[in-house]
Length: 133
Image 1 (cartoon, rainbow, N blue to C red):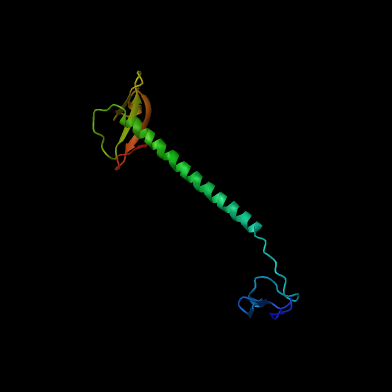
Image 2 (cartoon, rainbow, N blue to C red; image 1 turned 60 degrees about the horizontal axis):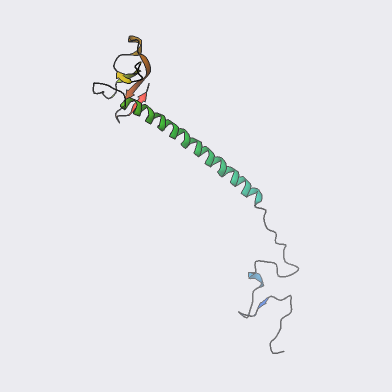
């Protein structure tokens, strides 16, 4: 035997020429404590459930905000495509009506003061965005 062989129960690293049993990530003798892996499946499942609920809640919030923005866009598009012969003033309420020929027009006259087919009343805010009243 050219090389001095160590017994099997001795942890000797032949590359570094050192005893490194204490550095191993596994048990190196019969008397060493049992190493058991922790069960992370329950933690993973709870985490997955939490993130799924969080993402779904955020999605519903964004969808609600998007729907509100699209409704606001449709109101503004409807009003800007309507006919009116005056310049609307910020902070005032105006009323949108529909004629018999499906043409829309904006008016200062309130629906209770006339017999036109009213589509709604709108408020012009400082950002020049029409909000339904």
